Image (cartoon, rainbow, N blue to C red):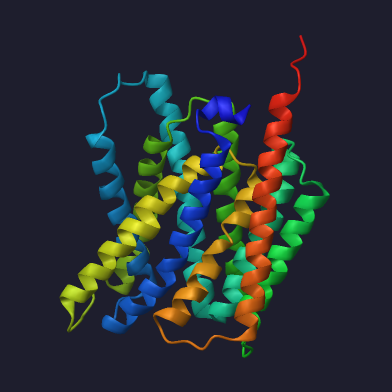
Length: 316
């Protein structure tokens, strides 16, 4: 049903989400390089990331063939959806950056990305009627175990209650964004391009006051390198990744989306070893294997479930 509503095949939706998750993981490494090259803070980086996403996504939309203007009622729906999604996006990113500052990267990552699949699974069951099933529950458990091993395996994590609350707020923003996207995808008629552009515009406006207080223009002795890094962050893990994410999340079950997007810390860990010179540990290998196995198993189960539902005769 969701396939027919959105027009995007399930297999392509799964591929979109896998690419988006891997691309999201590169943002952390790029942000680390930004911090090394300048005094830019997390709020300012989030603002420029969202602003670049708006510009790039709008440019791509304007280059597409012109379509008939939507009716006023339809435009109001797009604006409402963009506002709700943009608010969730702003909470997701800003609360996560604040959690990192309050309690450290490891704990903030585990709480945010670990609570996300749980909140999404519960929300999808209560609001969308999506059943996780035994195999799905096992995949979620395996992915969360892999996340904990991957991020906390190096030790030295410090848990601070305020930081945990901020991470939970970030997970709530991410969960709301995912559930809304899935609901609208099932309803049909969603203009993912317009909604994504609008969401980034709303998120940019939400983050602007924090970025202005922090300082929008950074000081750097490597302006060219900084511009290249910001251009990359705005292009690959933002404009490209979120466009793919919103399209894929409309046709794939919400719990499956949440687990596939856990590819983000896997991608980040690989880049940390390859590009940033971090040591390859047993925790990195075990956590990565657990998460990749869970993602792969859940993607296969999703595809089989879709084929089974398509083969069942319609009741008339």
